[in-house]
Image (tube, each protein chain N blue to C red):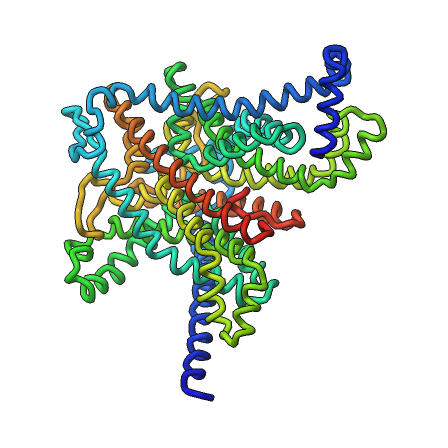
Length: 283
Length: 327
């Protein structure tokens, strides 16, 4: 072998070695995060963490039951406001839309998807908090709901498109009208995929903090109804993390661990259930 | 579906009004109406978003005009507001993040797309995409308690010693800084760069590689001289996509940047970003002008990310189209 060839082979091995190293380093970050949160968070987890209200500063113990329930309420509101629009919009794109309008809908959806979450918070603030003159769960749920629309549209459309045309034609050939074919044949055929999309979507907004800071705000108590400021796990994690108290730091780790486990579990289930892999910039 | 639609459409227009009522009875027109309303409401929401941001920043826009963008003062007490320190901080942290994340991310995606066996590649990609699902407040938490202490005691002194002649790495070391925010952002955006670039690389036709290998190139040479240039636009697109994310990232940055509205040549100085100041001061803003100034910052952020996102998607679309099979 000439010296040049040896050099070229060396470069080949070295460069691919470095690229492999980059991949391994990236993946190890995930394991580091998991491990570190377990190490710090698990000790702070206890029964009272899930069942008690936060205690005032200085008193040990207490939990964030209100934040957990609050997060669930906010997600419920988000599903109620964002999902119908997103789902029907996706049906429009896949089944009913003309070419030009569909192009603009898709482009708008992509733009909406790129809007920073803090800006979505400002938006919900201007349309709900300003007229009502106080923070509320409603505003937080709406902010999260609007954030869900883009992914709901794109995933619904994508999965409806995977249903073969022949199945639609079979429905139409039996004399069913178009909407019946779509509602009773096409959508059920794509249902698993669509639900996966919903799950990944929920997963993404479940950990959002920024849009809740000045919409749902915070609450040290239960926050009855939908019209009150409400606590949520991510915001609680944030306020505890930047506080100067050790006990609150411990609780922040615990909240982070719970949040991470829920998010990763939902994400993995969604992805593993799904045969076809989805890329994250589409979903 | 297209042909069917067309035929149905022509037939419908021929039969006219009577067929419209018939279709209404069978529900097709109604279904069309409902989904069209949903689609239209997406336009409506986007338009309303722009409208509200513009309307609710009116006071600040009228009082400060374009000078808002290059004024350095941020003084809520005297009600003088300028965006420059925040724009500066946002740009500096995102640039630092990209400088770290793009080489690492592209290298990793080259490994995943070109070398790793498909099975291992899929597994690693799965794990990397899980990383993208980690909420940003958790990155922030780890940033405060792990990253900042490590940077303060190990990395920053080392950088100061070796590269201290550059103004970038001078000044006192606090830990919380532009640099810490940049590093944390880099960790957060790497998964996106990897995922998108890998897809772009996989869309490069196999013939391109085979042709290069057939002329005697090593695998690396085929990658470096043929595959990467072919996928260049898409990879740049992935970087822009990641950049849009970094610009708008709020929680993690707020927690490690130090929240001090200043412009400094040193990356070791604490700073502030647009998203961070909105997060921190929005609920404390007492006067209308103050709130409007913050919303105007939001408007600036919105416009910048929209432009960058639109550009990135265009680039990615162009490459995956050219490759024939979009992933």
